[in-house]
Length: 315
Image 1 (spheres, rainbow, N blue to C red):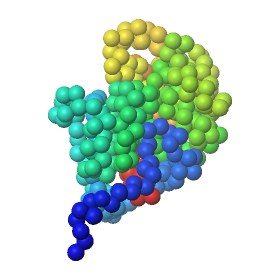
Image 2 (image 1 turned 90 degrees about the vertical axis):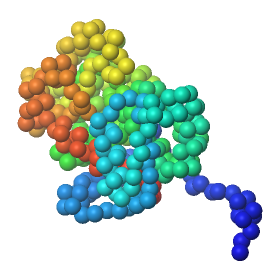
Image 3 (image 1 turned 60 degrees about the vertical axis):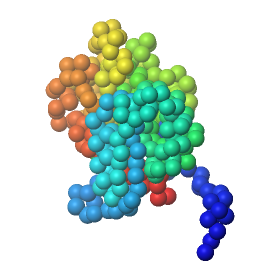
């Protein structure tokens, strides 16, 4: 019988762990492979074919911010792959009582297979990942929303084919989703035109890194011209509610209406990560109209995240 004292002295070897904290954590080839995998997983799901690739695997989900799509897609996704998800909010964990995020990370590394965080500050996810021996996924931070990009790109590929060389327009404040879109433009080689007021430009460093793939203008019409897709988001993100009034005023010229949509390709699609405020960043006519793919896009969060979970846990 092996000597138990001897056994416990054996070092634990962790193969180099992959995280998905920002888009460039994937190579362009990996990103495209994930899209293909997500499309395949979606068709399996529609055919009701069981898939138990993540049996006995557990995902811990930490939410500092409210969530509908991120929570449901990750929880249902783990379930559909035969695994399990645990929802942790600061209110009902020791995080709410001041346990350092790095201590929580070390503990979860001993108990679960993968962790997803939706945090206020991007640094929180980076700190968590810095000591984690399991894959860490950014489920949204104030800086980036990379899981949204997987679903958005899957949606574009389904509707319009490969995005390489396409012209995409973003209208409104340069927020976390916009920052992520800039990163993705560099990775998947498309042209992004961002229309926003000067005071709400996206992150300067991310723009500089975009190698000329992303440009900023204050002219909404110019941005929409010949676009294959127009993307927008709420004007006031979670945590910015106090600025709501000034934002509504500054961003009013960037509302996506039918007139602007008509400047794009005739088969252009409209995307929005939701929740949406009809009558603010987009008119009801557009979001509920025939060119809107927002429900397909929301549904794709599920399949894109299943592809991501399999990639991080099985490859």
